[in-house]
Length: 609
Image (tube, rainbow, N blue to C red):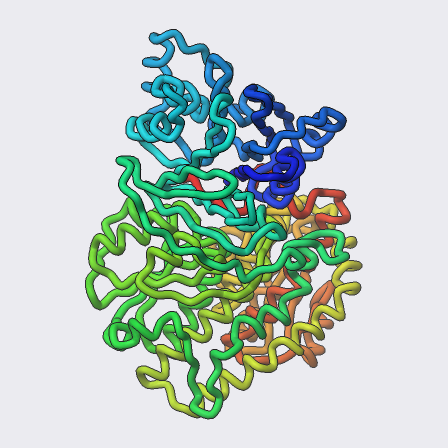
């Protein structure tokens, strides 16, 4: 949640900070603000709402500084107001701080600081940091003050701080909330996401928990909170600025839906070995011997990633003959999971920074399980903290509602199912058949995308219904949940996904002529069962949209509307089936005039619990 951008260098800091914030707006858009140092004075400006409001506020001000910090907020403590927006200033106005995360003991710290005469202007936990740092600030040693303050803090943070009498450096620190340093030429950057610094540099350093950085325009140094120097590795960003822009589409979400054929190619490039009927996943090679001994896999994830994990569960159990469970990452630590050396815990996360998933991985490591990751962001915390893993290579996903990342997660889970299956009982023939079919998926998705106008007309027809039900069985049950999630995320229509067989155990009570049902019923091993459930809905005057396989003319006889997808292997059907569901949700939200890329109350990367 929330976005941080810091800059020190030779350019106009205001323009650089605003541009970075715009690229991070998907992380939060309740309010925003900047603080710059010029002529020994901190100037701070804040605005409620989207970043355009801050930009309008700054128009014509000509701050023209060379150092500054900025923030775009997703509210946790305190409503979206100008007072609660970041940056927060110390009482004397000499220090400014922006913060991502949650300070769990902020009430205690706040009361102690009030007794010392500090005046608080906001309802946020973050403001405590500005006053706490002020308590320790002396002799222009901002880093020392930040270190001492953070030693008293309980919770998570990614922070940057500046001081008016120390106008050539930014201090940045991290615990549980991501921060990355961008290394430039006579300029350096700090951001909570590499998207903010694309176009300025591709050389980055990812801060680890417990690290603090002093950053000037010409240099940076990283230590722990006790000032012990830490050697760091400079990484290279493999995304381009063009990939993070809309490319002529009305919204990032539509662009990312349309990118899915390419995403499948990128997710499989160099990994398929069709002649051998297997795959090569370089990120897992170091633990291949351990994988052979694994008897159980627990997939942990949140939201869309969890639905991908549920489909992966079907794949791995059917083709690798290995026991798989899928857990809510947010609940994993609060149970007492039984883990041992024959258990692998697989984290699925687009950002690689999801707080609940990261905490679950750390718990699994403490208990001796092999930890694996499927993440999209190179250098992310989950990628670094798991024993091994696989990158999606989907490129930056900017829209809050995940589309291409979900598809790439399904592809990688398929590859893992083949790898594990070939280690066990899967035949070469079966492996080859799956790989051959994976290679056909990009063309098949292109064919689906060509029918976007038909789906757009269908969306217009159903855009005003207040409720929706999605049904599916087997591989398509999690797909029904994902379809419902997409619709509720961006159109605010109440929608639920159900296992079709469960419908008669309660949820069918909702059905009438004003409660449409989206039935995912490809011609597969459970097709007849799906038709039975569809008939039950028709008997209660429910409206039906059927998503089914090309050539299934029977569907047209019973459904109000039909969407066709090409035939593929049953296990790969969700990779094709999700595309019409994404388009359907997208066009409904568009017809409603909603902000598709930035749905209300949501942010892209959930880095707080």
